[in-house]
Image (cartoon, rainbow, N blue to C red; front, top):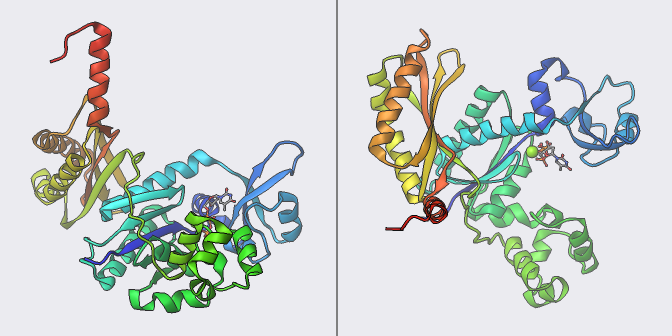
Amino acid sequence: MNRIVGHLDLDYFFAQVEEVENPSLKNLPVVICVYSGRTDDSGVVSTANYIARGYGVRSAIPIVLAKKKLEATGATFIPLKREKYETVSERVMEILRSRVDVVEQTGIDEAYFDVTTGSQSDYESATNLATEIKRDILVAEKLTCSIGIGQNKVIAKMASDFRKPDGLTMIRPDETTDFLTSMSVDKLPGVGSKTARRLGELGVTTIGELSRMELDSLEESFGHKIGIYLHNASRGTDEEPVLERSESSQISRIITLKTNSRNTNEILSQLLPAIEDISKRILERKVSYRSLSIIGIYTDLSIRTKSKTFEIPTNDSETLKRQSRELLEELAGSSTMKIRRAGVRLAELKSIAEQRSLSDYICDQLGEAHG
Ligand code: TTP
Ligand code: MG
């Protein structure tokens, strides 16, 4: 099957989180600041909403300069609160993980995902799936993001960047060359101002021009690794697989119920395939879980979860089903409202190899025989 890869990037992320928390900020410039503490306004801009960007405010410019550009605009300057953004980021990534098979998170607000199987290698279904992911994130977190769909990670990332905010750009394989050809070289992921400048000195400003360069001369100017990358990426070629990031320590699935319900058996029978799927995934990844949560999204779109943490990590599918039923019963009994969507999440995933070495270590410490 031909690969289809997606890339999701939240729009003006930190500033958008602040807008969601305080909607009155929304129609004015918002700037997130990293204060250095030296003087009142010393420090740099982390990010800004699109209204502030309209005045020329960008990431990394001095706060003093941003204030000058935004004089008398009613702009708000907010100190960066990383923990808050990380919590929101985790929830967004969980929504993404509940919809697709493999997620590789590459930053606080961005991730690649593989939709080859989920879409049966069909670009229309991949785009429908991306629309659903965007809607889920908007409904649950009130956040917009931009998604790109393409034949590999390079194209997916460039596509997600292509139309922002709230974009969805699909580039089919036969559109890839046209998509790339007149774009400036610095649009290629990994090409910063330094590389772009050096390419400019070689007379190359567009990706189309770059694609016509001989590999030899690129290797001569940039070394083997970067030379090959530039050569391939400019032709729309990129073999890098989407790799589930090993530090991702949780896995979840959410389903929409056929009808809203608070009947445990009814919900469980529909959730069962998701539980079985997740159980298969952890066996494939050779991990066990220490924490299990059952998630309910109610008719008013509020979210409740019931969780359990275990002393000893498990990966047994029957145990998982039994524990899920218990938590679901608790969840259904905790509110009179009906559940619209239900989900299961396994967290604190531990690699089985790691566990074995840990128990070996403990045995050694205790002087016990192995066996
Ligand atoms: P980006 O995705 O690069 O930027 P963004 O989400 O603010 O805007 P866009 O709509 O263009 O995607 O980075 C994600 C977050 O990382 C951003 O909200 C703030 C933070 N960040 C910094 O703190 N400093 C920086 O120089 C950059 C580029 C980002
Ligand atoms: Mg972003």
